[in-house]
Length: 161
Length: 274
Image (spheres, chains in turn blue, orange):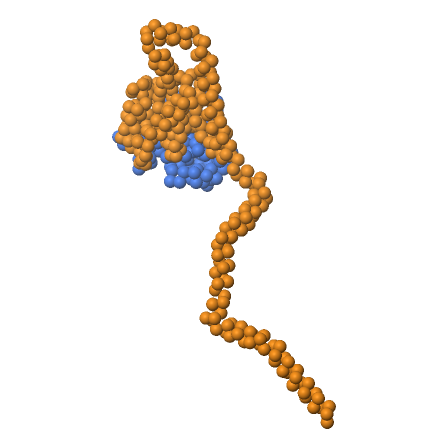
């Protein structure tokens, strides 16, 4: 199967790079890491006996159109939109961001991910879910690795569907 | 009773005189009226005049029209001069700048080459060797030319950065990642320093260069070592265009097989025989 381009997008400091590192290298760096621009890496995943090479573009900072070159998004098969469950400001514009991504990639897969689940209680998580205008696809913890593999496997399944 | 008779006689005389004086005019008027009322007679009179005017227009109109339109264009150009220059300048500038840069590079290379070669130890040695061995000096120059060496070559989808073909002397890094990063750098540079939709054409670090040939939906990146002169750059560019024409015409629905085929052709054309 030919490679698939996947974008990791979301606000500054939500844990995109940590998810990226956890998935690619199975490790998490507690040292705060800020990406400058974009970092590309590759990992093959196996879904129902089909190997899918994923090229992950970890894009720094923002989703907004004036901050990131739109060309970074072009040709992507999917976007993983990450927000930080502990910081409401990272999901207050979620609807606008998702609409923007849908316009950029019509027909592309968009997975909405709430990260840092290890830092919120079940009750807090439920409150966030009910307050959001859209459904969270999966909650993850880049620190513990919770649901990270599942996120990419789910994405892989949608890619070959 | 004599007075009324006198008046009558005068009137008769006057009528006769009028008849004599106006007869010709009245006849002419009648003829004109007849001519005007008879289409055949009228066309006989008018047609030659119209034809004469048409002939005149045919011969004179282009000049008259050209002059009038020319004046209008001049006036409009004068009025919108700045706007016109604004539209034309970037395109003209781009073409002129590219040409001048290219010519300067060629000139510089010729001057450098002449200065370097005329009195260098290498040249003296070469002349001596040529004389001693009885070989033409130009053959020795060609043998010793420092040609470029292509290390890696990639065909990369322009938007996604996905690899469409690759060939390398030896594989060091994951080439999918290299293609992605190259595309990211290229997109970043083109976006950040956007100047009239120009494309990134070269990345250079030390003696290592990445030459980029841009096409509509993809680009070819050639990583090489050695100095690339303007003429060599032209040769490489032509070779890449020929390659694209031969093997990259239909790039829809990319499959692994297509990627393998392109990679094989890249290896055969750019790596194997070097």
